[in-house]
Length: 250
Image (tube, rainbow, N blue to C red):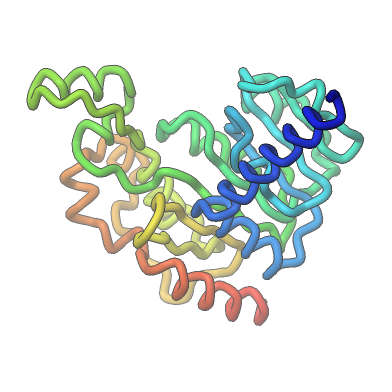
């Protein structure tokens, strides 16, 4: 009976993994891992581990202040969990270890995601690739920096009990555009959650749009939509294909 229960649990786990593998984050990250032959992976903001456990890279590092699973049972020599804030982890981490692929999916605020991106440069090399989550808010309330306040205001205004929230992560992409000319990026914005792909490659004909960090920090949803082309949006298929070509030439 015990063996049957264990077999059933394994089968359920495999079914969950197959289901997760079809999701956009997992699909994109595994595609990128194959394109760049990634050997090391860092994920900031792991929660239940739906994405993390489905990434086909042997050496993986997870950072989250409160994992929603028994991470101690999952930890191995090559799969490491750090239950702490990303700020704490970056301060204490071994910067001699570099990551090939980095997924930033932590607290979806401009300040925290920008700090995570800047800090991750210390554990990156010249061929590192980043994927930044939740970069396109759907309405002014989902772009509100405070998640609970955004949800409350939406409900108060329209009577809608909708909990969708992306925060103001989009400002990080504008910062990369204006202040990181040695970084190339594109924003996947068709099916699935919009995400920005970033890699080290100088941008030709670089010209800042805002040229002011404070201005970027104060942008609202409508100013974001007005300047949406700064995000360099495109379809997943087109962006991954153009990235593969650019990465191969670098």
